[in-house]
Image 1 (cartoon, helix red, strand yellow):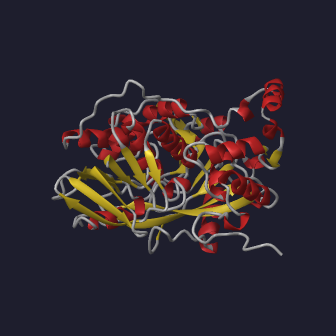
Image 2 (image 1 turned 180 degrees about the vertical axis):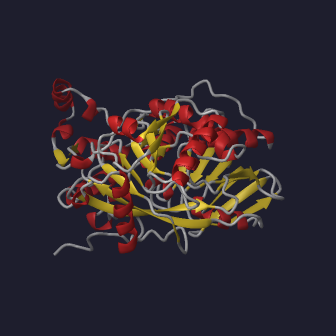
Image 3 (image 1 turned 60 degrees about the vertical axis):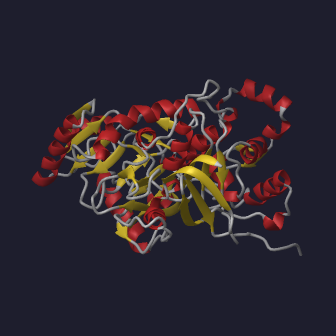
Length: 477
């Protein structure tokens, strides 16, 4: 029996597990997919938003203002890559857009955000020469940054597991029953677990999980955002994250470097049928290219190496929903976590823990809690001399598997062993970047499959791309 069951192993559920692991508790994460970070946490902009945008007085505004520095601190502790690169919010010559820039500046001051300043177009171009000549007024957000959202999730859950938390994947929650003080959560497979408290961090499915206990006061509105990722030879096109003034549909199309050296453009904002509607469309990708060029005309879209779509879990109120369940004691909803949810993941976790404390959860600090996690990328950060010495002790690190991203066999084996273990090809990809380069796994995938089969002691034909029936091969000739 567990003290806390967390439904959903995205960045919110994962960070909650990590923060709860500071206390003497039995914690279990329940994830319906074959790996963690499989929803919006693997397919978003990876932006640390400065906090100028949320309406003052909202939960978003409070948690965004608190969340930025908390996120950077935790990222350092768990070795999740990030960069404080700052962001620009650009107006393009119209009085309405320039008024919006000034309004966002004032809103940011009201939200208590440090380091905001308004630049003329020429002042902004002195910092970002590739910025469009049409940019006339720019909000410079100096505390903003970029992270890798799925690596943040993997690292948070890995740290939680190293501190004793459990993770159950392929656990698609079908029912939640309460008998007295205990919850029984049952998966479609028939497996069940019991716990004293339940936290609903199910992202796009949070309203369905709430409905399992008869709580239907909110409805998730799924909105898809399409992106295009460009090769690393475009990664230095800009150093800041370049936004256009936001609209009612979101923060608009951005052009941003990534922590791994690529260039990212997107997202769109289109209503879709459900959280799994992650298809890209010609119209959506055309819109991304056209609107990104408005900000940075010199982006070379011939260098696109992949495109993808993620689905935001929005709600009509426009604010986060973080509150006790209606009529169900000891259950908390953490729902409608759209932008700036990634930025707020640590502050959301801390806020949720206070709700659990108020509900009666005993929070006794652990003397043996470890805040840090082994750096999975330590090898690539070594000097050549250090690598030579390391390879003598660990020869697998001298065998390069992914030539595009220079990923070694040793790093891939480590990713399959380290918490949370990679179970499929995409899981290795998210942890090591093997398959994320120009060839998108065209050369390294068979080698990665063989390593997964060896490490897990299974037949190569059973290795999947992303769980389920996604087996690339079906047998030997």
